[in-house]
Image 1 (cartoon, rainbow, N blue to C red):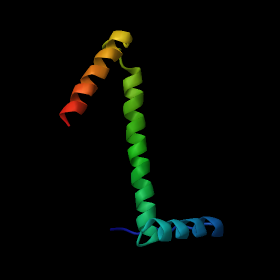
Image 2 (spheres, rainbow, N blue to C red):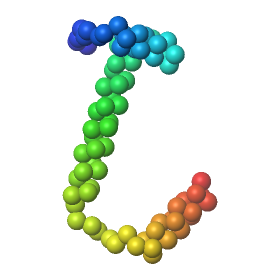
Image 3 (tube, one colour):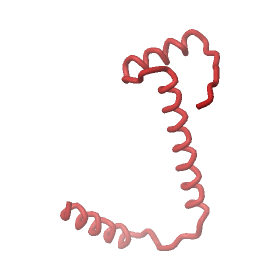
Image 4 (cartoon, rainbow, N blue to C red):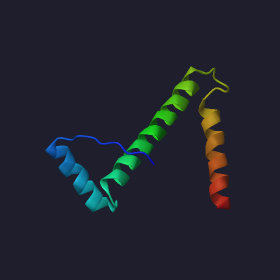
Length: 80
């Protein structure tokens, strides 16, 4: 694993220290790694959403579509 040193203003360092102690992280590095992972996931989700928005519609999302969706979700919930 490689290392990276960062400089933070005192108020941000205090915030990180508080998050580490309050949220159960072992070190500030664990906290920062988690933030980076969440940002990666957010960027991946954004890319998927943008790709979906740019794609051609497959079906009309009208009242019948949503009623069918409700029925499928209801059946799936009943099985669980």
